[in-house]
Length: 334
Ligand code: TYM
Image (cartoon, rainbow, N blue to C red; front, side, top):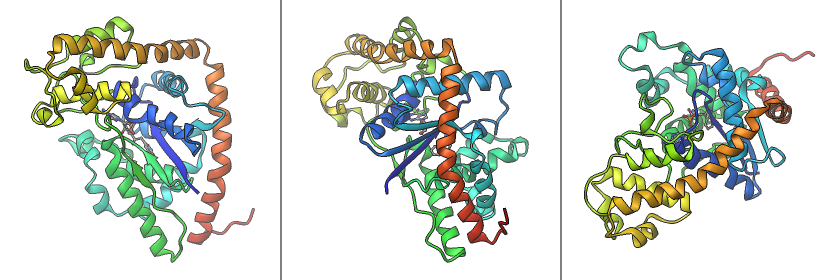
């Protein structure tokens, strides 16, 4: 039976990259009628230092972003990871299945740990095994993510296969990464070769879901571009990462293909295209920031949604964790 699981770290404000690469598609999967489970992965966030008050606020704000983007708590399970202890428990078991050599190949760890990996937390290193636990503890079959998470989902498949092999069972299904659409890797507005990220020191590099209309328009107007006009065909974007990024963003926001966007704007300059993109971005994003602000005005409703979501998630995860322990030989006597 198909089951979707995905997660987002509440480690900062969410960006247009998170919206187009994840949130918007999360709502689409739910609307297709598939069982959908979405998680604010606070246990992942603490792999790097988080100010406790900021983490609490960002977790609620990220929940508000899910709801404002169309994730309906009546049809999807929405919760924060730390309220369902099976994630951390299965992660320990999977730490004992995953191999050091596999973890050493994880490019996100290398990027995040930087040059001085000795100073990185042990949690940051083990992070991909916790992510595998997130997915496998629900026997999820589909994982919608952006491009940057592909390696982690593939590792999850390897961990599932090794567990099944080591214990001679057919227990954990291999989850499929779903990396679809034109916005699987939204790039920085300042540098078309870098991913748009909530942790980029430059706020001008990204659009935050909480930015107001003027800020969104200004950031798009100031986005780095080359001086040439937009080409009529996709091939013309090949060596123009900034132009390609803006065309992809337009396409994703408008539910068009990049070719359709170029059909409309090919031959026109950025003096025409950027204001059109800014208008479109404001039209699509301002209802989301308005709804987020409404929800954040009184977090009681959000906390209630997260609590109810955690109860539903726990009801699925708990028995799968118990079966995992049985398979591994843990005595259960109560
Ligand atoms: P995170 O919090 O970095 O990002 C959340 C989701 O947003 C996508 N994304 C992007 N997509 C397109 N363009 C971008 N510039 C961009 N930036 C981020 C990410 O690919 C992701 O889908 N490890 C995960 C969270 C996680 C998870 C999981 C995901 C924990 N457990 C289990 C799936 C299943 C992460 O750090 O995502």
